[in-house]
Image 1 (tube, one colour):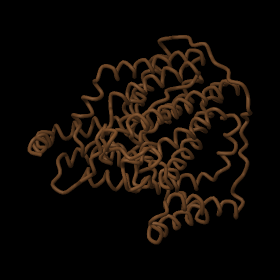
Image 2 (spheres, rainbow, N blue to C red):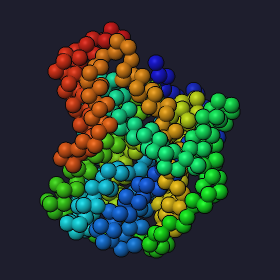
Image 3 (cartoon, one colour):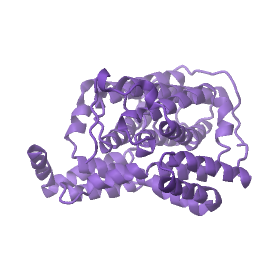
Image 4 (cartoon, rainbow, N blue to C red):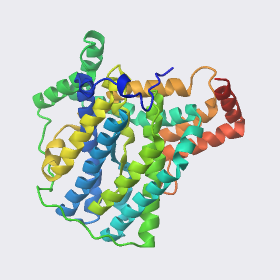
Length: 412
C-alpha cells in the first residue's frame, strides 16, 4: 500500500525546508524542467508561427505560461509541502496551431481569459473535489498508467534511434541504481548522456528565430466563435487531462492532493496567462509525475523540493525565453525523452499495481480506462485521459463493479 502523506502535517512534524533540497530533489527538478522547456516549448512556437505572431508576442506567450507555471509550483510546494508542479496544457498548445489559422489572435487571447474564468468557477464550486473523491481509485490509476505510458515507450524509441546517447544513459541509470544507491540514477543518466552527446557532436545550436526582445502584449477581444473553438476545449483539457493526471499521480504516490485549490490555481493561472497573451497556465500532469516519483527521494515528505527547483527554472526560462530557447533546443531530443521515461518508472509501477491488484475492484473498468488512455482517441477536442475516466466508470457501472468497490471502501 502507498504511504499516506497528510495534507498538513503540522509545523512540528515537518522536516526543515533545507532538507527538501538534496541531490535527488535537485536532479529530479532539473529533469522535469528540461522536459518542460524542450518539446513543449517547440509546440507553443509552432502554434505561434501558425498564427503569424510576432517574435515579441511569442516571447510574451512563453513568458506568461512559464513564469506563472513556475509560480504555481512554488506556491503548492511551499504552502502545502507537496510535489505539485505547474506549467501549461501541452495538448492545448497543439490544438491552437489549427485554431490560430482561422481565429484572430486578439480573439484567441479573449478566449484564453474566458477559459481561465471557467476553470476558476469550477474550482470555487467544489464540484471537481467531490468528483475526485467519488472516482474509484483503480480506474484513476489505470488512466494515469495509460496516459503516462508514452514516456516509457518514448524512452525505448529514443534508445533505438540514438543508442550511443540514449542507450548508454539508460545503462548508466540502471547501473547506478544497482551499485550506487546514494546517488540519484536520473542525475547520473543525464550527465552520462550529455557527455556522450558532446563526444558524438550531437549538441547543435538550434535554428530558432526568437531573439531577446521586449514583450508585446495583445489587447483581448471576445467572440463566440473563439469561445467554442478555444475556451471550451482548453477548459476540458485543463480539468480532464492535466489536473486529472496530476491528482491521480499524487494519489498513486500516497498523497492527499488539495483538489479544489489546484483547480482554483489553474483558473487564476489561466486568467493571468491570458492577459499576457498565452493559453492556460495550470497544474502540470507530466511534471508533477516526475517530481512526485521515487526518483525525487525515498522520503515523500521531501519530494516537494523537486517542484521548487522545477518552478524556479521555469520562471527563469520564462524571463529569458527569447535567449534561452536556442540553448535548450540544442540538447538531443533522444536524451530528453529517455531521461523523462526513466524518471517515470516508479510512477508507472505504482499505478499498475494499484489499478490491477489481486481481487481489486473495478478490474474491467480499469482495463478500459488503461486502453483508452493509451490510445490517441479524442472527441469534441478533448483528449483521451478524460474519456478514459468516463468510459472506465461507465463500464464498471454497467458490470456492477462500482457497487462492489463502494462495499470494499465501506468495509475498509
